Image 1 (cartoon, rainbow, N blue to C red):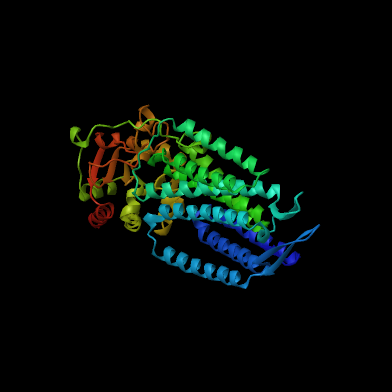
Image 2: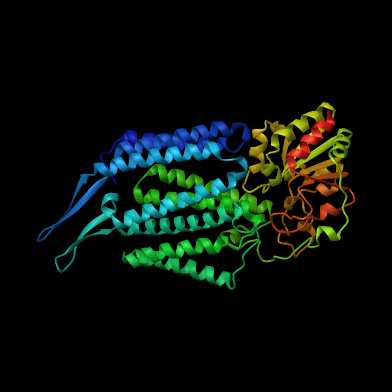
Length: 498
């Protein structure tokens, strides 16, 4: 691709797009402003895409050789221009169709799938630029001593291309594994390969050395070896990660996809891609760091892969049939909560699976009508991606001032009459504080066990959380298990409150 003309309006349009992206990120930081943030992001992307289309044209080039010179002749490729427009239209149709049909429970899988597509796009752009550098404006004609001529990629573009294809390939294969884990096609338990750390370090070192070598030798074997090794390391980095850490993985892959886009932006000389990629990459990295602190994980170990996967054994290993537990009914739960002064609701992925957020808000409204103070406690990694529970509660029109993060509400459980846990397992498991052999040890959890009464909705006593460990709270004297589909159980509680 090559600029038709230097136009100050192009820079202004990209600047407007960049400002829209920044304001979009700001809007997405709160459920109250998330819709506005989405709209600004769409406007910014629309401006960037339209500007790129009208200021760039696809070219086909011919290398002309003479006795003492070499020249490149480029012509407009109208067939390629039609293909670009058709591809954009097809992508828009697919995107709208998927977005309209996707269930909120499948949103984490969708995000992982989108990350994989961003990574794959970076790989394909890098491959296209490598195969046809003239069309991307990154080639220089060179005459060799024997009189032959060739179009070589300039060294700076080789660095950008090498990093872009490496990060993109890692993002693609890593996101595919994350999708399979989130979608249930792979188990949530870590898959620990022997000598995985040595293998990972060796592959990463080989990638970096080959990218450096690519700057002096643009042989095809170097480029494709970097690509294949990067696909492999993406797989190796994500496979050892267990389900409890998957929200951090989604955030980390989001960051990778941004850096891949930024690297390709340099290759394409497109400032909008550079701005967008840098925003996504830096915001994803910051979010990953915040979540790592919330889970008591090391950010360095997240980047290295395999974090939280050293111990597969763990807490609460005894089967439910071997331990005593107390079962309650919807009527019991309704009575206890209607007599309480304060109820803290703790939503988890089980609520998302059952699509129980709307009836849960109805239950909270009934309790408030009885004079009960109701709050919602959100763990940073509840669900399968960052902010999953916040999105679901916002969809159900839960007031934002009733929703509290872990650090703001954890101290209140000791003074709370009822902790109502709906489908949240690992984030309420006390083993994270006491059992060094648990895969979730060290992760801050919600102290629901300190409430006077814990009402815990779960489908059955046979299953365990996504991290694969049983929850000590199930067997506490102050816990009453409500075994049923989350939505059906809350509906029965609402009827009992009436």
